[in-house]
Image (cartoon, rainbow, N blue to C red; front, side, top):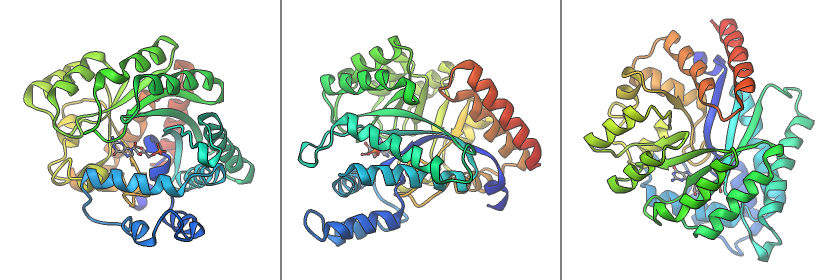
Length: 336
Ligand code: 5GP
């Protein structure tokens, strides 16, 4: 773990509200004082070795009932950045679903302003400023309609100069139909944004085939595939964001040893280790690297290569991507 902590790393799959600190979640819940949320609901969240995917989405609903103010969102964004920087993450793409909560006076725009404020606050307060570079993906939640998804895509395009580089499709994989969100993903792509899609978290071969045919810029998870989809995936060469703890805790993959990381990595397919929800799954990116090192007997050099090649899959423009890669090479040279 010490080696993995010292390693400069790139985080490409982290959901903002899923990355909330445990202490912050409890503090915000206590402030609600039992009005809309009960402490047992929150305690449900305490770290568990296994939590079926469906339970995770109930938990996200609980978290969302606690994080309803712009101040809370600002705080979470600031703390997530601080935690990542402390873990030696030098570049992060953070994703979140902009929320409209009229009862709380929150619009999707003010939600995003709160996220930007948190990022600004981090840089203003941190002596580690510029150690971590951050970009954002806006997430479409699978509960959303075509119109709502389009609204998120338009907002993402509007916020490009604020650091939004792409769109993500996430949310409960048992909910909704892929076709619903295609117009929004097409719109984003036509406007120069990159697109990451959660796929294959549950076995749904028709949907996974349709997603592969659409060819997202990156895929998340890809746990439950049949042989023909596996073949299609390898041919697609689309990089995959892999979240080991998340996949094992939710039961999408039975154990670390059974995780498809090994086959993909050994087969030369591009993979990027990520946390998914560092709060919900009680992890850090260093820990994910350490789990990979132990489960798949990776050498220090292989870990360095994994960290470095993540730079090739960021959603930055080519020039910026090269600068990041050069920075990673320099830092990794220093870490050897
Ligand atoms: P937020 O978008 O509110 O910042 O982050 C939490 C949301 O991210 C969840 O409500 C869910 O939509 C999405 N999310 C977090 N983790 C996962 C995951 O493992 N799988 C999927 N499909 N969605 C997730």
